[in-house]
Length: 292
Image (cartoon, rainbow, N blue to C red; front, top):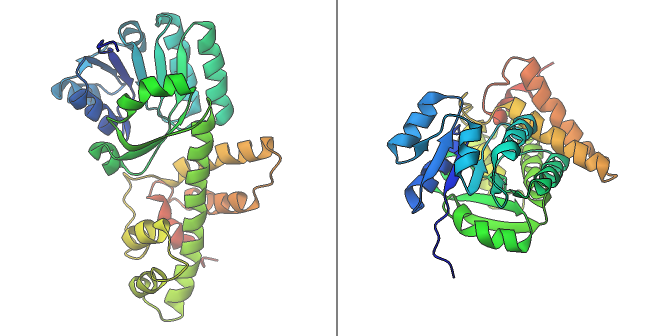
């Protein structure tokens, strides 16, 4: 087995990307070239041992395996267009962002023409999990490519799952997120019902947590955000939720499924945006339940 240590690149050093990149910098034996539009974010990674890059093209010229953590499909497509112009054949691009499934497959096809390999590897769990290196990472890639990138993804995640070929990582991520968003809507409705009927939210969570209505959403979003009405603005906001649900509804339509519950959930998050609370952590939709 070759002992060659690949040169890594990382583009996108925001809420999730910053933590993931820092773990790669700390755990990888070779250099990690980093770029972000925010110079402070780059400087922060350089302080941890990364190599500052001047542009996307600069990263693409140096990195053998390049990671992306960007806001959405449009940004990923634009960055990948630039990478395709500058990367050497044989380069591997791993997208940790959440995009539409069709976008991931279109990018993979375009890269293939340039001899560049592509995997979609969207991540789940929290910003703290990104910092701790305990994310769940869902990968769409060939088995051979997965074998090459899985050890590197292990720098960032404690659970790395091959979900199928390119695009399947996004399928699983979108299903995961949409199920969570739907459950938070259901919890918001029932928590307000219980409160008005005389049951304190903390007691509701304790009792339901012992029964078949228990869930990760109840124990995490219900307990930590909805019961205390604690919705920080630096967390995952409703407009991010709407982006992910839009990708899921697009996929559902393409697959011939009328996702009625997903559409209903989206109306709550759109109402949060319309009501001026869209920048709050998304479980803030509980504030809308019962409003006339």
